[in-house]
Image 1 (cartoon, rainbow, N blue to C red):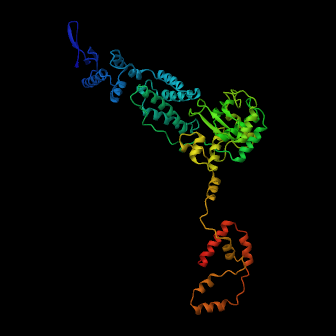
Image 2 (cartoon, rainbow, N blue to C red; image 1 turned 90 degrees about the horizontal axis):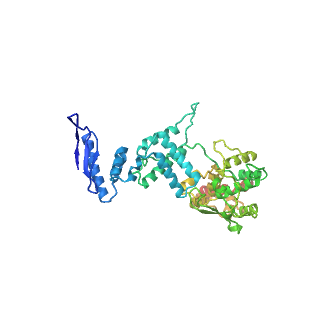
Image 3 (tube, rainbow, N blue to C red; image 1 turned 180 degrees about the horizontal axis):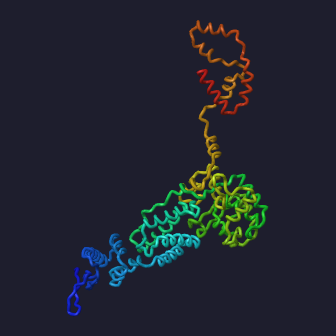
Length: 484
């Protein structure tokens, strides 16, 4: 392998080319020549990389990560020349192809692995928006700093009146996840040596929540179901059907798209005590089939609702274009339940899933079991995002703790309060009993003519008005004073 600058003659006058050329023998021992650069050092570096590339091709070993990265950084004409010489694999020059072509291939890959059409369209649109916003034309153009700068600009966007109009941190994370999923596919298929976006991390969405849902209270849920039961038709769905839809959603945590895809064959209602609903993998968000239990009363209501419907008939008859948020918004107004509370938290259809998770927590269901019922991969998502507890729940949880103060037996309570007919011994009298005999006799002489305390009757009345905690606290104070 040698480096040279060719000479040529023009009108009898000799000239030397300003560009260096590399002469070498390829993996088939065929003599080749390829144009390098005008700078000698850069050309020498290219010569060394070519030597490594020919050696990898001759030994049928994959090129190193450093060598692949160098190939990706080459100009398209150089990659095309190396591919024509069969020194560089055709797949390794695909990084120079337009990104739109790779996006189409990625979309086909998502369809082949079973990703739903809606999810494919969603992630493809997010990835394409980032690519177009950053101005990337090929895989080699993708840079972490450009993506980070673009997403920050989307979050910091201002409206016409100067108010924040940008996307939330959670939405920004969705865009980052989509473009990283696309780049991960490029790495797995050999188009890239490594993911240039691997250094980017999602933001803490809890610090920038633009839409916070709340759970419906049991009273609100009962009111919503009762009012919807008697309501009229909305977008082709009757009131009783919508009420049953809300009921199943709040007792299973199923999402609207999953409920919309349910057919009669997905329900096992033969035995109402052991009834269940099957979520098909194609309809589930995590693409995993699941079977969730149904409450007996809800199973009976579904059985009456379906009647003799065919196995492939839709359970709720929801159209594909219908939106659950529109229906529940009208039914919330009918039930006079505010869509947004004073804290800015909203109620929408997905709030029924939040209600399900919150009721599991209120029912003291273990987090691991709640995570399985919610079909979450991370228990933190179940506990922090979907479980919305209030101050009353905290107070009830503390009240359920075991008593830390020992409760005295009934005989001791009666004796300490004087309700057993014996006078309560005053603390001074008890201390007097421990004094020497002379002092004790003088104390007894002074107390011999003392009449019973006239406030005993009032004390008994006050004792009867105390609850268990108050009586226990009073007894503890009495024992401290008496030294018992």
